[in-house]
Image (cartoon, rainbow, N blue to C red):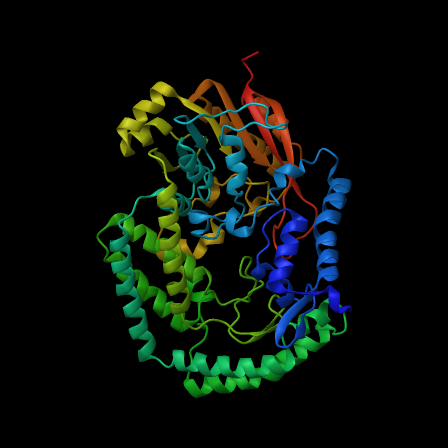
Length: 530
């Protein structure tokens, strides 16, 4: 390696920013080093990286990917709609990261179609400030949030009561001093419980043993770099070291009399949470139920839900999927070392309370004086006007006189996700009714011909019901992968016509799935209009 090729992390970030035409921070470069994407060199105590290795990394991950994806997915792939120029902090800005949610679209995609700009792909604007937009599959509320930011009114509908609470929390208005007061009460109660048990001391001892063991057998970033270059066989090396550490873990569990998983779990919470965490969850929820301010109570419930999701007894790699409960130390392929389950929610509770308040304040500075309403109901038959009238009669009058200008939504994909199940812990804790049988295209129904027919019928019924509330010259945008070519039939059944479609690559989906993948944004209009 030539000395002239080695540059500092700061210089590397400046070079990469110029090379890629977007901001690359020093922490982005450090991430590549930490996870073994590029090597770390040292000179007089300073960390250096190779400019040529950086160049090769970006070429293989950016330039070659674009060419490869177009070869696999077709030349009609609109790379401008990949939004690859945005960092993760921008695609998860302010309230968009209040709570994890599978299958949500990034805010920049919503913004692209709702704002007033035009370009060579979007030749006209479809919405203007003061218009009303509808999302009949509201999910985590991305359309509602972006509508507010752009000065549009919005209505969301979802069969999931938890989704409605999540969406409503994102656009809600808050007394931040009241939130902080209640957070402090709950944090104090949790810390008191932690002091009464030995789990905190146990976890400190365990972390100390793990640090010693991992430093010896999984040194970072050398271990990950060796994995990427195949000088270590992970399949044989990692399981051997995992077994080596287990006796150390078990001796600490025995010494501190730590209770792990329950023998006869009666609920999702019993099955997927270590006993001490289960006790902390119940304590925090009992404190939340005492809160008198309804807005504060709901946002505290969202924080608790986000917290306990991160504290389930599973591996880091399986956090989104859940296979079997894990109550012992294990080799974590994601982090390249021996990791442990969690024994307290306090760390995550503290982190998420700070993060939530910060994000709510950020959005509060951007919000417009518009109305966003989210309804729990089946979009195939829900009486939208009646529900809005009971929530906000003045807004209901506006909906009735002005009509809804259009829709921006993404229905569930056929047989891909069970939307209620992904938040089973929240339904268990908060006692919401589950409406799994009302989901359209759920995972448990599969992707066969019958499931596809049900899907076409369900989505078209949603559009037919919503059409009653739309302006005659409406614009409907539907985001879908549509690998079974179902949307032409859906449009016809709904009395609509597809006037345009935009095919975009979907980048950065999951760590496990890096295959070329695209989705289509269908533009529907009223078939009765010429």
